[in-house]
Length: 203
Image: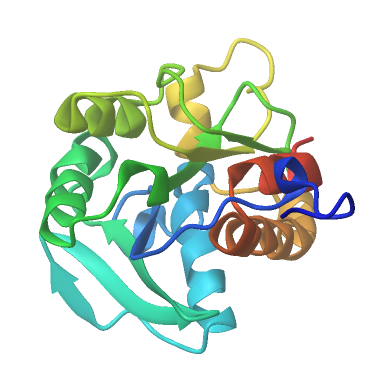
């Protein structure tokens, strides 16, 4: 018997790991602070929060393994360059037998204002080549993602050139708070599901 106060529709759906959290970017020091690498930045912050580090290479990706609230978490930074991100992500999803609802991909989006987070349970690539690669390799768009806004390029600058530039000094001052908020969004996704994360963090 369910008591009236126990509204099951408002309870988080029970889920079990493992989870893969994939952050997209380009390997190498020259790309380290690019807008395009905010997915890598977020995973670095998340690994610090979980008190673990990236020390292993699997399927051409840097991998960090951790536990959060009893769930097994695998953080993945593909080292294939952005446009081939799907090679690593799809291989690791299959190797660890991760349900697609437990895969979260985080990456930059020029169509969102700087610092805005946008979580969705599925959807297209929006022209982001790393996401397109993952969609093609997995054969589906039905997996969660979190976009982090970088804002539009100024004037007539090409978006491809813009995302390969470093964040400005003014933007860098704000990045810590943005990344901290992104980490909390990921942890909410793991512990409570996509609906809860979207309600709490979507801008």
